Length: 185
Image (cartoon, rainbow, N blue to C red; front, side, top):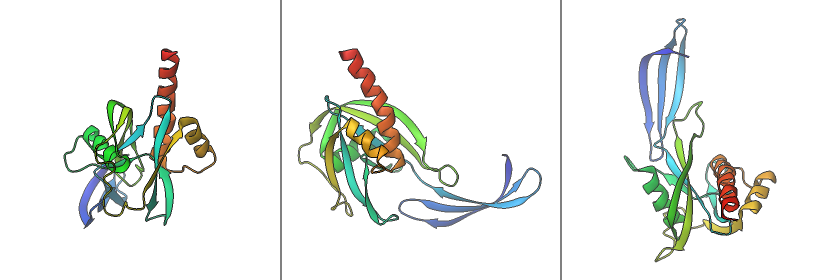
């Protein structure tokens, strides 16, 4: 739907996102308000070992006030390349580096009100990083586990993995990894 922007109001500029409230007019002349959470986006990593075990993290999510299972991920810094962000977050959150990288997709997380675009990568040829994990402030309670990809799929079915970016990464990655195994057999 097309509209005419009448007035843009930056209501709040925070560390994670900016809140914008726009006064707009639809083409038929009806006025309305559109609220937008402007977000810089981020990168998500499906880190897979040769035997198709993957890395998951369990972290407390403040808005939910509970711990959830997720793929490693992080917010883009200003003008940061999404692949560089993925590499940084993989090392920080898991203590691993990867020599193989493949972009799986990009997704808008909640396009009804948020501009966040996440870039999802498959990381392979994993090796432990010197110095291990480099958790940031607030991530001290984050734990990590290595599980078979099939177990992660079962966790999705059992509603133990409920994070959208994680579900997307696992489901798309599973197809790629399955095709790689079929070609290597």
